[in-house]
Image (cartoon, rainbow, N blue to C red; front, side, top):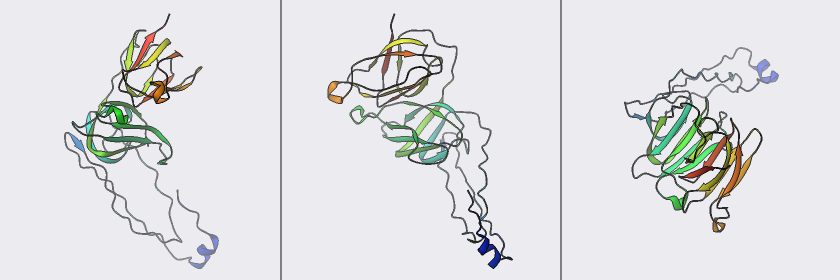
Length: 239
């Protein structure tokens, strides 16, 4: 946001004009990889005549498979479209994926997960993310990760379902109903549900991990499930 010009400064410098900096974002795009945008330093504006920041214009992009190198990306710009993706790190790589809100505040992290093969460190080989316009995706400590768009089909029938780390929607990824939820063998992690009627915030795992081995839940259409640090979360229907 631009800063308001104090009246005193405006009187002292009536004939000063704005210096407009330039901003350019460039992506190096190949058929398989997208590099993080590099922003050149802009000329410092005259403090007495700072103009409001321009509104970000989001491109009309169709979600598609892509490989991103380590760095920061804004959803809706460059090649990264809003949408739901499954994310996997490059073979033999490990690191972290963070998604922060559209105001760029790092304290408002909507998704955070270690990617890799070390389950003891809470890493998972695959994660599902739901990216919204303006959010910032940060990949760190790994060379690259591949994002594959998720194509949703007909609403699933109520059956034993295995989800993994990430964000899922009841009615799309899992049928509504009553379930017993258990972590995969030897796994532990966080389990959240932001529901229209019921909310859950629990740790699944062993007592040594401060968790519980199972949890009974009632899920309604539109509820949002988030799981962390587990490569398998098992939903078994209850009568």
